[in-house]
Image 1 (tube, one colour):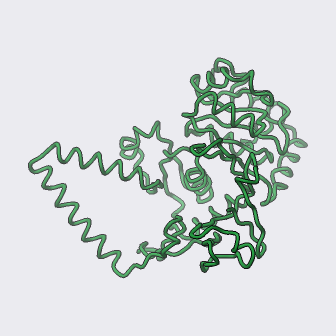
Image 2: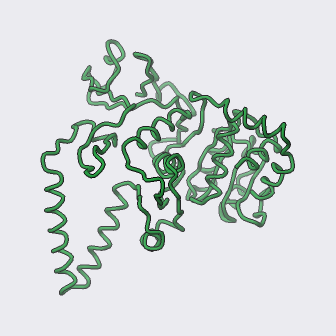
Image 3: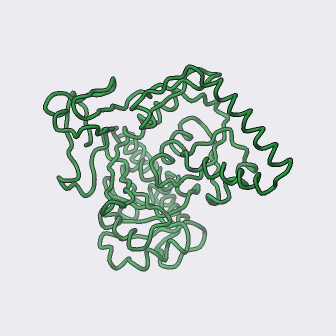
Length: 358
């Protein structure tokens, strides 16, 4: 990581510059990410399934001066649109062999950093990493663009750290855990929960080859932690159900018997639980107790605000600010802002010392 960070500096990448990552989940993603963060460089993840045109939009909109690419396929996307990316100066490929269209490999970048390493440079790097402040911009994560042009959500180091700190305080990590990472690191959930949180708690991370290999990888790695969104569990259940129905006979009967047992067990475990109403719309629940993890409670830190003056117990807006909200609108904050920032897309208010995004 240190060598990669110094290698970026040798390429002329400076504090405050943007560097894009176009890659699937893999160890090199983490190396590139931490090299950027410890250098005060703002990294910009790009989903690996994005088109060349979408990648070019994100690079241009963010002003990225370099991009990491994982494979020949990803390198080809950048090569196709590189002439359109005026800010882009360097393409860095993962792997041992320089990818077509790439200027460097990650190994070459690290070698540049190692060659430049002196006691003075090491001390400068250390001071620079420690000088990064909580309020400094850490990353720009772009929305899917389903309702218009993608917008880059600007998140600070504290935005990410506050989530890590909140989650680490309520999940009983042992210090010897293993997690399987399979959701895209380009998404903030996996970035925070499957990446920073795991590193912060001393958890080993295994990277799935793809989303399709997750069932096999689970049996290979046997992780103690799996973090995911509901949709993946639904798809896994649908596959198991399909196999049970296709098997018929005893296989089908055993499946539905097991499901009835599981349903009864879950009902007993959840008896008396009262979800937090509107707060259930946002995943702010934390689980209380070391042995039993069924009582929902909002995690520390986030603030919720419902429109039409209805302030939740975590709300912070009052008076004229609350009056400007649409009825029934739920606000969760705060990111720093968006790129681009048209007024019609973003109203950023300050109330009671907090930023709230409408």
